[in-house]
Length: 511
Image (cartoon, rainbow, N blue to C red; front, side, top):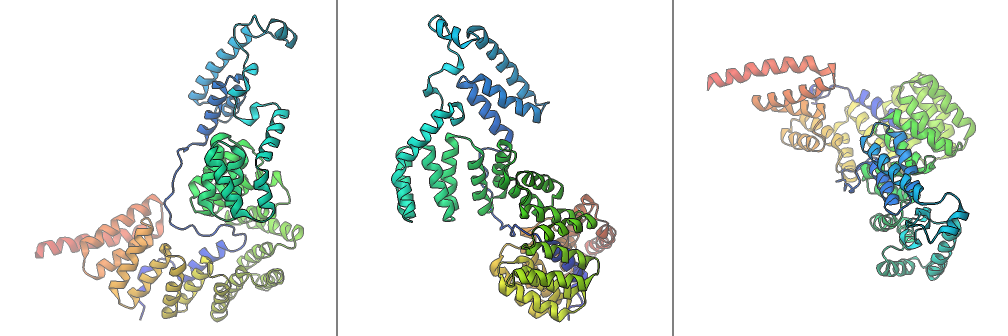
C-alpha cells in the first residue's frame, strides 16, 4: 500500500535510526529545545559587558583598575581599535594622576592639603558601588550589615516559610531596588522553586548593581530552563570570562555546543570544566561523546574505558561503551555493558533505548520495538525513544501503529518538524494527499531548510499535476543541496527540474 513512500525518503528508516538514535544515546544531557521566541537582552556582545566595566571604573576614578580590565580585553582582542583608543585615554589620565599625587604614603599625609587634585584611591566612599572597589574589611563589614538587615528573612527560610520570605524580600526590594543581597537572595529562592521568570528579574536587578560571575551563571541557568538558549550562552560565557575556571558555567556551555553538534567548541569548555574539577563525571562523559561523534573511535573507547574504571557508578559510561561495541559489531560484549548499566539504573529509559538499538542491529525487530516501547513508558518525554520507535515501526511496515505513535508524540512535542514529516510520508502512502500536504506544510513551516521536506512537497505537487509549484520546490531544494554540497540529491534534482520545465512548456502550449 505504501510503495509511494520510498520516493519521499532519501534515507531508509533504518539509516535514520542509526543516525539519530545511536548518535544521541549515551552521555545525553540536554533535552530537545522547544520552539520559542528568544527574548534577546540589550547585551549582544560579551566584550561590551567588560568594556562597560572599564568605563565604570574610569568614571569612578579608579584608573588602575580600569587599565587592568582593559589589559585583559587587549590580550583577547589585540587588534580591536576601540580598545586601543581607550588605552590611550586611560594612559593619559594615569599620567595626569601620577603628576599630581605624591609617590609615598608619608608624603601624601604631609601634603594632603596642598594637592589640588585628589588621587583615585582617596575619593569618597560614596563614589563607589562595586564591591571589588572596597577594602576587604569594608566588604566583610557590609556583608555582615546586609545579613543583619535580612536576619528576619533568614529566620523565615530556616523555618521553611519560603513563601513568606519571598514576600518579605519583595517588600524590601520594592523599597530598595538596588539592595544587591536582597535581590540575589530573592533570585535564589525563585530559582529553587523553578519560578524562572521571576528569578530572572531578581538576578537582573542584582547584576545591575554589581557584575559578578555567579549571578551571570544563575541568569544563564534561568534562560536555559525557559529554552532561551542564545541568552543562556551570553550569560554562561560572561561568567567564564569573569571566572575562567567556573565549573558549572563551562559545563553548561559545553553541553549546549555539543547538543548543537559543535564538538570542537564543546571539547574546549569540557577541558576548562575538568581543570576546575577533574572528578566531574558529566564533563568526562560529554568529552567522550564529542570524541565519538568526531569519528575517533579508538580514542572514544579509551575515554569510556577511563569513565567505567574511575566512575563505576555512572551508568552512562557503560552505555557509551556499548554504543561503540555495537558500532564495531561486538554484540555480545555490548549486551554485557548494557546489562551492567541496567544493574546501576534499572528504570532508566536510555538503557532500554540502547537495548532496542542492539536488537535492531541484530535484525530482531520485534525485540527492538518492545524495548523502545518500554523506554517510552519509562520516560514519555524522551524524544529519542519516540523517534527510534517510530522509525523502526516504519521500517517494519507497521504504518498504522507508527502513525498512532506519531500522534502520541506530538502531544508532548507539538513543534517537532520531523514528526510532521513522517506523518506526511505515511499519509501519502495511504493516498490521503490532503492530510499528507497538511502535515508536510506544518513540517516546512517549522523547518524551512529541510531538503527532505521540500522534496516531499515537490513530489506531492507533481503527483497532483501542479507542475509550476512542483518546479519551484525542486529549485528551492537544489539551492540548499548546492549550498551544502550534498551530492546525494543534486543530480536527481537536476533531472526532475529538466523534466518539469518541459512539462510546464508543454502545458503552456496546450493552453
